[in-house]
Image (cartoon, rainbow, N blue to C red; front, side, top):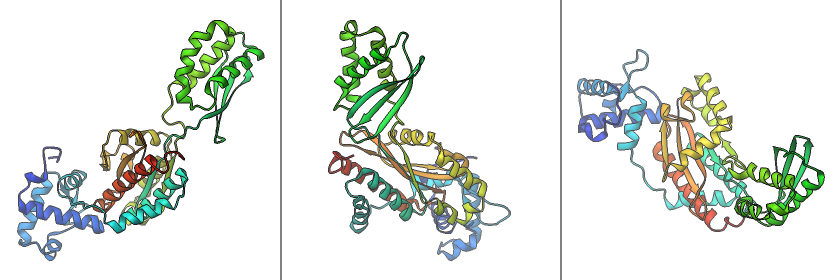
Length: 359
């Protein structure tokens, strides 16, 4: 029988809850199977026979399994889920821990990238796993726009931002495009975009182009329309990056390191570009911390790992990024969850205040 949403902590009697809690907490501490004798030594007021019977009942519910031929039991992924949802006691971070996190993030100075890098280093150090921080889109006002001819069929639109960043995209040239029409298109976009972000200017361009189309060269109007179309969908991954720290922590876990194939798979997952947007999608669906255990984890299901992730927001309360910790399923959930939660909320406050005008 598989323990799913029908099995809850409250469905277990007090004896089963006590035995189950002791097994899970022992597993999270040392990763080893737990037998009835070990539980007796931990102070459970039951005979070894009663403990074994209770363990068998929990295994029948799909909450425990026995690895190899060992008499000890380990929690299944379903068992860990039940524990996290119904039995895990999570406290708030103490004021000293909060100040420590604040000091580490403040060490990044007035630079958002440095602050996020500091957050990633801090999370990997405190959590004992690998940290993942997805940076927000960085969109500065446009300084200059230019079209460059690549071939009779292709042109390049180049955007230079006030902060010196350069973005370009290859696009198809409209028929009859001449150097004069290309210059006209560049001048038109510069007149309407300079000093504005692309997001701010694109709607205005769509409106003014409808009004001004008759006064523009046909090929120039087609080029402006095509250029605007290249950014009209605002690719959510544009300008984002994934900061990963603490991969070595995963190798420090002897149980995970023993399965090098899983470690290799996890490292490959962390390098995939799609991970950025998948992580953002997970964060957008959450009001706070989300926990994915083992196969529940849509990003790293093949690695048998757990992911604890939370979104962070900008001054407009819009989710702009996410951060979290990836590690073995025996992560210290009681420790990691409040750290991830507080860090995400702290970054949101910093983005909404002192960093909002500098990010």
